[in-house]
Length: 330
Ligand SMILES: Nc1ncnc2c1ncn2[C@@H]1O[C@H](COP(=O)(O)OP(=O)(O)OP(=O)(O)O)[C@@H](O)[C@H]1O
Ligand code: SF4
Ligand SMILES: [Mg+2]
Image (cartoon, rainbow, N blue to C red; front, side, top):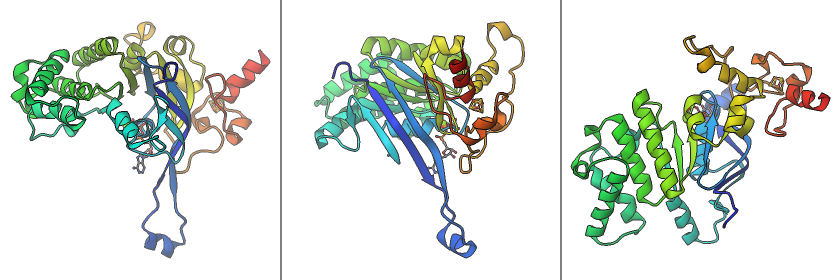
């Protein structure tokens, strides 16, 4: 398996049927309507690395995440984890092994932690479900070890989720991910509900655990400061497509796609400190009826004729006719 990326997302698309009820459609003579939430997305994540996915609300980030963890199947394309696809595992055992390796951490862990269970049971559940340890003593020992790893106390095992703060609950969610010996953790806005100082603690914890256990992260955030701090590589999504992908440093230093440039301008950094955030001009169009050609053209200051007709391909990490024209000219 060495050399195989931990995650490969290959030409993945996902449509949702958003038609109105059939009778309404029949009476109005209306066809079925589909929403393309994710359109031909390709990226890979190397083992023990962090890949960041950014983009405005509705750009398809969560849909990508759900396909990576196998909660949702792609309408087209393939997702492979350690070279194995959910849809064609060699055997049931392989699928079980795959499921154990992947874990998802959500923005609001409260929704994913059973409110009636004590922390002990919440963390022990994946250990028991995957049959990782057998005796009750061994399970209890492992729960203690996990609580310690995420910076909680042994005494916390008897408490319920509502007795914890948001940051502590996120620690419990991370302990639960480690409990199944997950190697790939998909984090969907893991810290966006937290205060800035708590956010930093959780991100630092995630980095420590990554170093210790060679964890691979797919990190979704609309907060560019978070992905910049955490990710080795970043993909910027707009209306279901990747518009730019590259190394974090390079992308922040020299954003090439007009949309990435706008996103970065909207973030206060050293040079703009003290200024209010710049607004990104224009609204995101509807993914049910996206603009033809480059979906960004109604908001793009560089748009020209070709942009309104032809979808730009992702070439050399950027999907933009203007950038590609410049590259050819230069
Ligand atoms: N189950 C579904 N049925 C219909 N449409 C859906 C479904 N899930 C997502 N969508 C649509 O797909 C598009 C992408 O949604 P998604 O949740 O992936 O975006 P996102 O980038 O995660 O946004 P946010 O930043 O708000 O979380 C949106 O237009 C959304 O309304
Ligand atoms: S393809 Fe055209 S509209 Fe799209 S980002 Fe590039 S210049 Fe702007
Ligand atoms: Mg989302």
